[in-house]
Length: 201
Image (tube, helix red, strand yellow):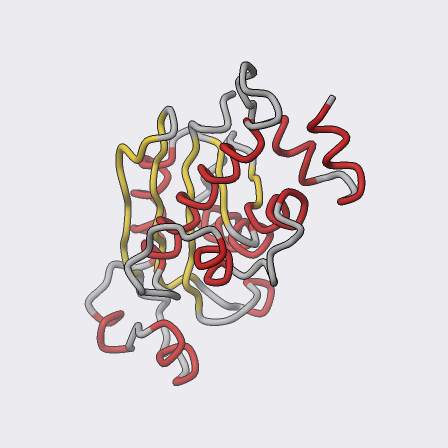
């Protein structure tokens, strides 16, 4: 599967862990086909309880906004249709995967796509970056952004730009070779010191 056919997603949530009962409150995603954004998805979702003031301030998502949103189960069923069997990308993917799995488990939905993490990839192929936070990397690589952070679609869109930039960076080593999703997963799983040698083979 080509690495430039993916769904890039981002969750805003009530807290850090679904194991502690935290829920998703917004999902945003962009669908890339042949490296072009062909579709996007963004919905607020009502977690069935109030969110605390820290999360309201951090995301700009208020309890008032969530009151009129559909519940998580309804939104996640729509997202399942949007996502299909695409592979998935997120920045700090372990966080988003936890919430995707927890929310899909509630609606008994299985998915076949694999995850890749643009943060782990950045640590390996952009080792000179000051840090690997999304906002830092957007500035560092001069990627397009609309100045909005911590809203799901804005963050997913920026992560999409970052991902395509990362694929271009890797392609410089092997201009003739198509980059597979599995290839990216191999890079993110290897020690940083071995990446350049691997890419140069």
